[in-house]
Amino acid sequence: MKILVVGGAGYIGSVCAELLLDDGNEVAILDNLSEGHRRAIDPRAKFFEADLEDRARTLSILRDSAPDAVMHFAASALVGESMANPSKYFRNNVANGINLLDALLAAGVPRLIFSSTCAIFGPPERLPIDETMPTRPINPYGESKLTFEKILQWYGQIHGLQFVSLRYFNAAGASAKFGEDHRLETHLIPNVLKVALGEKPHVEIFGTDYDTPDGTCIRDYIHIVDLARAHILALKTEKSGFYNLGTGGGSSVREVIECCRKVSGRGIPSLEKPRRAGDPPRLIASSEKIKRELGWRPQFESLQAIIESAWKWHQNFPRGYED
Ligand code: UFG
Image (tube, rainbow, N blue to C red; front, side):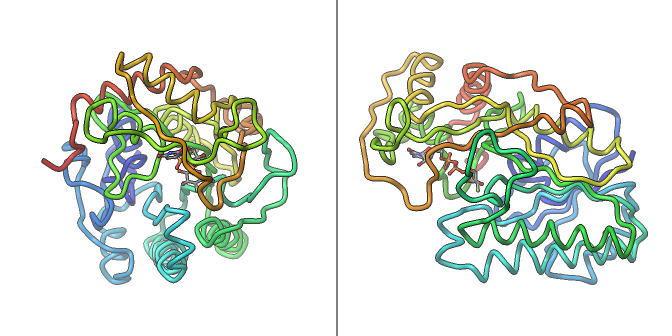
């Protein structure tokens, strides 16, 4: 198939592009490189440096690359930033997303795979979180992704656009070539591994008084390659739908740090800090629907395997993609 990966120079998009290419697909990447990195672009892919804000250029790229489907990863994705600058989130994640959808329709591209998030749910009433649970985002980031999901549904109903929306829990780990390097790093695992590499003196633990067994927050970490595989399965179905995507397991912040110590063999000093605003104590996915309907099965179910892959990548790229 011919696939256009929008945001293919970012963390998740780069690994999806790599797997698509490994499977023999033809891949083009569209990215504005605001968060993505030139070195994260698989050299086998054709690259268009462009911004979805530019409607005419977006349409011309869609016509030029004539894909069978588009995967859409390009978004702003920091909860804290969205609370300070909601305009950026609604502009990038909703308005620019509509530009992409309209270009898809004009170019006759029938199918979109969308990168959504568990942040659309807000604090859950029960665990694990399945697709029937109410969506009540508590920040503009989650709201922007939920709004785009609703827009997708209307475009499906009115224009016949086929779509799959995948709501990721905590994406983690790396492929052999591509890994996690955000310009502003807020995520736990890369921050812990930076301490292991000596890039940072200590890792901060945000909150040790949660109602969890060790007092720290629990998250469902899913390997980036398992996540990418879900996108490839989503391409193969004609049905539209929304799917939660995690492993169904939960690891606390302390467990993650301990596992990083074990995998890296380094001390990794930590400092206990107050809670970070907006962190729910536990987020765990039910991925039963995607297993049942698309036949998805995670290959990396242990936290250790996920961290081992991340550690390998960080050792190869100690300062990330930029020298
Ligand atoms: N944490 C620390 N120290 C750090 C970084 C994080 O203690 O240096 C803690 C956080 O407070 C949280 C946990 O580690 O309890 C995980 O934090 P991350 O930032 O790695 O991930 P989040 O669960 O906050 O974020 C993820 C996705 C977001 C998504 C969000 C939904 O990365 O895109 O889940 O809640 F929006």
